[in-house]
Image (cartoon, rainbow, N blue to C red):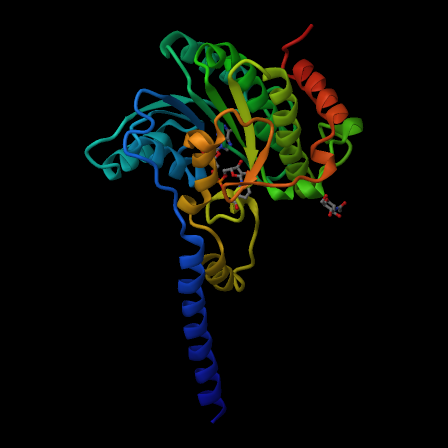
Length: 323
Ligand SMILES: NC(=O)c1ccc[n+]([C@@H]2O[C@H](COP(=O)([O-])OP(=O)(O)OC[C@H]3O[C@@H](n4cnc5c(N)ncnc54)[C@H](OP(=O)(O)O)[C@@H]3O)[C@@H](O)[C@H]2O)c1
Ligand SMILES: *[C@@H]1O[C@H](CO)[C@@H](O)[C@H](O)[C@H]1NC(C)=O
């Protein structure tokens, strides 16, 4: 008897979840449709393009016939991803170029940019997507806390070194992938590098808030150049971002179920980056943050010009762009 009740509950629950997922998916699956060949002749750089949101973004851009530069830290993983997305992009596709970029090394950022400036006549879109989430305490090659180093500082230097080429290619766009978790952060100027103590969730939030403040200050600096910069928060997406989070073995199946039901697929997660990279609707729009392809209101800590300026100046000296 009780076994039958449990069985019924499990089956009923299963049916409910599947139905819910189908319903939920239909609601979430409003994928963008762009005219074929929209990005023909355009060059787009995507950091962290071998996995998750970056990979889905690169795959869609390739279908739209862009020249996609996949900027990745692991050449083999990048080549495999490149092969996969080429195989799936159909007959009228753009081009893929795989390039090595380790954002945890400012030296690597510099040589990547040198190579781009030497080899690419133009950049139409730069998508700062690569990121790390709650990794154990570690440091970049130059000794900066890893999440701040990769999510913010590496992209800060990358963007600055590519700015001239972006300006020459205007109208051009910069897209910054942030996260709603910025809400739990602040910029800890007293200990930006977490030398005194390391709180991995705070450091992620701090780095994602830094992305938003960077976007704001950069938009101000780029006013009138024809280069726009906008940020986005992708929502919760089923990717490898959580690789450093330990989920107890017993909870894992439940977690898989929940993520399958409620998380966005990488393609869904790529919609807002694609919108900001490609859509004519956001031509000339700059300094904003988007979620689900709509402008998102930010907390005041992400729009504070004084903090944005202070972080910019400090970042400049940390990456060796001044003095
Ligand atoms: N997934 C979500 O729910 C979610 C939510 C909010 C925001 N985001 C943001 O979305 C962005 C993309 O993340 P994802 O979810 O697609 O995660 P993912 O699948 O883990 O992809 C992250 C990418 O960043 C790359 N990366 C990490 N460290 C790097 C380094 N030192 N140099 C160069 N590339 C590096 C990874 O390369 P490897 O494969 O070699 O490690 C990978 O290609 C991140 O900025 C993240 O903060 C994601
Ligand atoms: C770490 O940071 C998070 C987010 O900022 C905060 O909620 C949490 O209380 C902090 N943990 C510790 C141990 O300070």
